[in-house]
Image 1 (cartoon, rainbow, N blue to C red):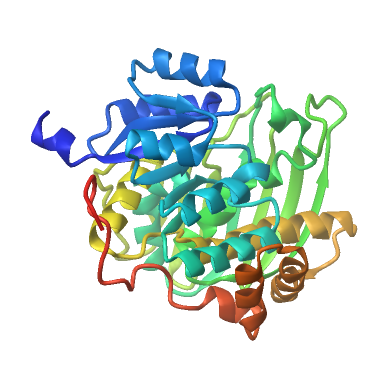
Image 2 (image 1 turned 180 degrees about the vertical axis):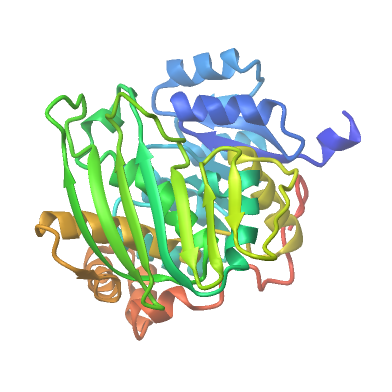
Length: 380
């Protein structure tokens, strides 16, 4: 075994579907983590996915059993969103830090329950908002940060997206499965956080999705600026980037990014550089492994991701109410009450009840303050 292989973090991947396969193929060549186990209720699918990736990994339908047999030291959750909380709880209570695919949960209340669970176990729970890791987005962020206070941010996403399976059956395939990326990218670009939203969603008559594949939303930011978003997953023409097409207007000028490789700054003295780093899920994995090795809190540690989910849920709720304004602070507090009502574990429920508010709960010290981080492939 080479020195680089010896330092790879052994991980178990839960979920052997299309996205799980993508993770496994990336992990097969990753210098940061080694896939030693794969978990799926469909054992034949798991075995076939492992074989197609050219891996020699332990396969099973029990997370705890596979982790023990394989020697995994962390978990990557690539199950469907409805299963995220249950899988994350199994892993965290088994002493495994978790990198979870987005969205963390179908609702903010479920996300808050996971914040409390992470607090109780002391393990890292990080969400893989992989689109934060594009190099040209980092360059765009550099430009935006030099423009001064925001006036307006516009993002448009129009795509023809055929993905047979659960996505085409979702009630909100755009807002819940795709816009979550773009909403999170807004939070990456600026510390000017959203406070409210008005949204309308619909399904065009030619759509192959069962739920609303199109939407428009306007978010009010804390400064009074606006984030204006529009998109569709069933538009067969003039395709935008998967990362959306962005325009920022601010005090000192403007900047744009086409979602791919074109970044423009129209402001005196504003410049930027495109970094050279790992992108997408590779970038997310690298930060996860680095956080475990150094103890430094990563982007999208669980409580840092909750407001992204609140943007999604607020947009869905506003649409259901005919475009009515939804205050995200009220949504957070309603979600905390629901989380307390739903939680069956006494220790988690007790911690949730101890929070003065949801805002206090997600502003507590995030994971990363521990002086004893886990070493990749080694002991705590």
